[in-house]
Image (cartoon, rainbow, N blue to C red; front, side, top):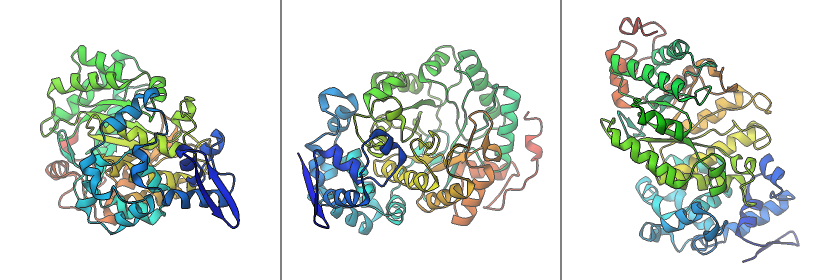
Amino acid sequence: MAFAQTIGGTRYVFGDLKTLLARATPFRSGDALAGVAAASAAERVAAQRALADLPLAHFLDEAVIPYEADEVTRLILDRHDAAAFAPVRSLTVGGFRDWLLAAEPAAVTALARGLTPEMVAATAKIMRVADLIQVAAKCRVVTRFRNTIGLAGTLSIRLQPNHPTDDPRGVAAGVLDGLLLGAGDAVIGVNPATDNVEAVMRLLEMLDRVRDRFDIPTQSCVLSHVTTTMLAMERGAPVDLVFQSVGGTEGVNRSFGVSLALLKEAREQALALKRGTLGDNVMYFETGQGSALSADAHHDVDQQTIEARSYAVAREFSPLLVNSVVGFIGPEYLFDGKQILRAGLEDHFCGKMLGLPMGVDVCYTNHAEADQDDMDALLACLAAAGVTYVMGVPGADDVMLAYQSTSFHDGLTARAVFGKRAAPEFEAWLARMGIGADGDRIPARLSPALIGLT
């Protein structure tokens, strides 16, 4: 189906839904690289106006990637909840934006299973930054494993103590640093330098000893490939969360070495361990705009829409945590701080609208036109938008992955400025350990209870 709009006497025609979505997207370098971006600001405005007039129900009739060609499309359409969609079924994309801005939080949250990724991606394209913040802040998604993540008024932090050689003592030093600064309630998560199962198991066992010794109400994860984690579980490793990067098409997931069937098998294996004490959300997913184009698996769909489709994959497996590594893939996809900020807020909005416990790695690579000031601005916007969690990296500089993220101090600043707290079980633990109590500032001193950790 073709779509048309006239702007300033010029008639613009968009041949199908994926073309309309791509041309309506605020400019980013990845879409230009893929050859799907609007050729001018006027064409972009024409596409956005045409998109605003499009009925939401149309997204159930026209898929951006054919149903028979892609298992993610089949998942999206087969899992659609018509009853949840009913309150907004009669609206256009523009009308849905207006409805969201006026709606009560409970009504917005209740829509999640009735929305497709393409619906929320389309809505994001016609929203201002302030709209993305305001609506995302209404969405409440709560998950549990050993603590409770996503409650109102909380901001969790993933403690990310990566080490360039996977030295357990180096990782433990990063863990100590983060715990003393109030990080770790989302997860203590290590990106391994290699995907060697023996090295992964050493890290898993060390993290579990630390957690058990100090009775920390959190969860650990070594972010190896899902098949490595499955092998570690078979060998008796203490696996809390199963991690995997996922994308929004069958092809990009194939490039990651995964399928929906494999992820289901991994989740069932983790559930069988019964390691959660408060809940059974055992999966952790990372995503990022640009991964589908990198794998030549984007089907000429714009990168923001493909990113939203990856959230349908994540949603299928009831994860504890999901996050977009928004600036990690590089300037080929998000060129500068302005594009990274917009993309981070879009990703957070779309993930929350689809019912996910959405975090964002507020990050950039050193060859991008961005700096820490840009990240401070994005972190503040996300905290205002009710982001579930952010990263805590020693000094904000990941010495293994070689990119810039947010520090433990940045997380504390966001909590202080926006009146946020850690997950309640973790906050109580911090108080017991003498690290911080009743919302007091976390002291930069060694708690006597943690002496000997390393």
